[in-house]
Length: 95
Image (tube, rainbow, N blue to C red; front, side):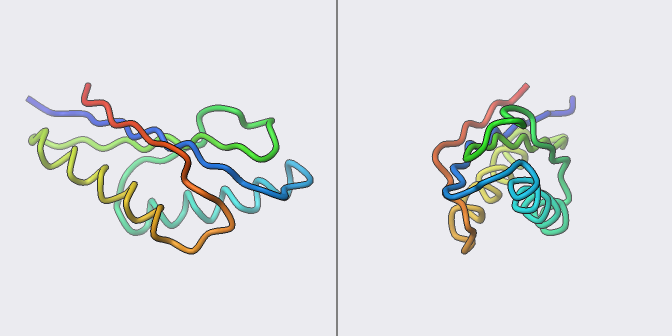
């Protein structure tokens, strides 16, 4: 049976003055996650709030261990990337 994993990333973006500026930061983060990990990614909450973004990352695999490990690597990578943002918290759910 397939395992589906959901990673929810809460990211703080200091000094954002407009939604346009926020989108300019969100899009490259989402594109990089997609490119490097081949997962589904979208901004899922707080799209109209400055300074805060919530990004959802989903992955599907026959192995629950693989999905969990992949999503952990995504979270670890974002924390290590030099972004103009800070990873505040993340959660992983296996569905």
